[in-house]
Length: 108
Image 1 (spheres, one colour):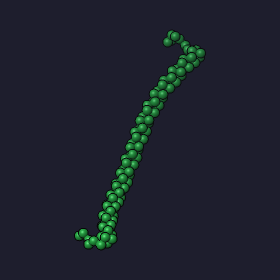
Image 2: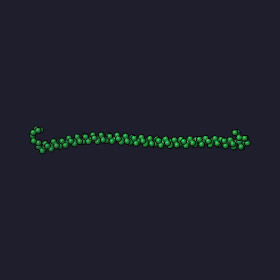
Image 3: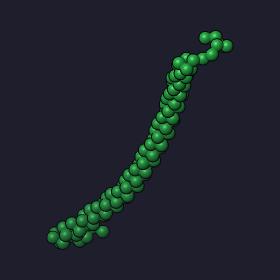
Image 4: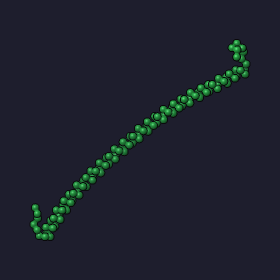
């Protein structure tokens, strides 16, 4: 095309259509890249937030389980001590009953 020659409507329309197609392609490429970038950033942020939340939940649960286990261990220890005391008292009572039945003096 000669730069000094007049442009026809058909040539102008063809050039505008070509320009429109190139602009659409560039905009589409730019928008696609930007959208992918935003999607990647959003996915990373969501993953980080979800991971942090899950870790906090895990920590809270482990803390609760530890507290529960500590209480149960204390109860079990108390029960063991009481049982041992009862065994000792039962043995003393059995000894006393045996002494009464056999008419022996206490072994103090």
